[in-house]
Image (cartoon, rainbow, N blue to C red):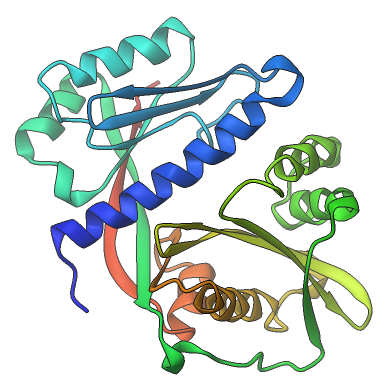
Length: 269
């Protein structure tokens, strides 16, 4: 399988639908106490959570240049809310003229992000190399554990564990979502999730406690979710990672290969 524009469009739409599902679920919590907004500007999707600062959820995905005025509309949307804007630009949507327009608006390229993929078939099925790692589907009453491991794994403040748990628990009965916990020697040490849309699965998140790293847990999670996606009749798996990171390396070890890199654009401060 080789990369085509149509295939890349499929990857981007799967990621957009994952974000849309997540933010719309968070929007249901306490009458949208978090201040969630999901707005479409032609081919671009602007995601925003006012009460969760930072770029994780305040981001633009899709074709930001699908109409002449889309960039101006998107910038006005975020600036009216006093939220810094971030554009995740897939290569099939950009050209020199569009990038110059972002530059003229006061944005600059601040990072790259890798998109990886593989076609799912019987050859992609694999086993966990460390037989001591046990992975199970999360129970509804285990999301406190999920939140604690997640914030520890990502080095976030401990007080955020409760909100992380709530923001993921609300997804457990939503179509397409699956959540898992990994244990090692009877201790819960890692969490992960994935999302399915129209036969394409996406590696949504994965975190491992620092004390349990370098034992193959992250790679085991990737292989486990590949196997689970195949059981759900998916034909493609995609993942995202910081370029040349350990996460990307582990995805490649499990059979995913580079599709393209996204260009990340943010506002100059």
